[in-house]
Length: 220
Image (cartoon, rainbow, N blue to C red; front, side, top):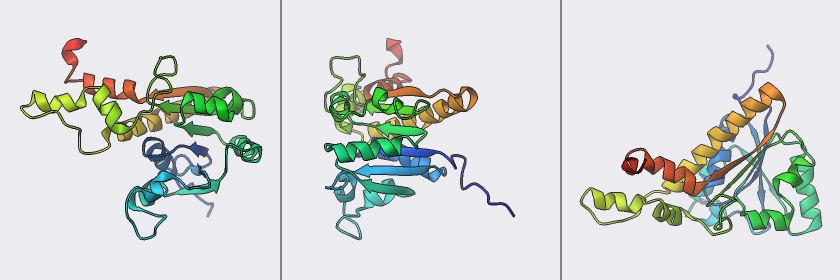
């Protein structure tokens, strides 16, 4: 019998230049769906390896979740050798996902223009805290920062409590899910037209829309 695909994204290669939770969660979903995900780690290793305890000093519980169904490559992107190696991988990938900030992408030579020069039909997803056309484009944005910026802590006050953070990485995880469906929509467009595209997922926009549905509905 002929071999059957391992999932709907079988045959799709994803170059994963992400860290922490948001980006790695999205690329983990692609791996679960059968994509060949290659995640880039610098020589110090990705932070998820040491975020929580686990069965090995470099393999904590977060890493066991977010690195599953992925292959890893160690590259120092600050060196010419590491940069060139990454571009060689990018040339073979239909999808590139990054959550590096815009200034860092420019400094490392990993912008959309840099990647599209070696893979013209790439789906390039750039996710960070704030839109690239805003004055806060390069501001650091962790889960609690985005929760605060989009009013989530205040929702507890509205139901009779004290303002506090949602006790899960909700901004990272909702944004990761948004990356996943946005990239898959872009892949469908690519399948139909042969055209790649740049997809931007700013966390603050994602979570503003998420909260707007009911808690900020009156502001519509």
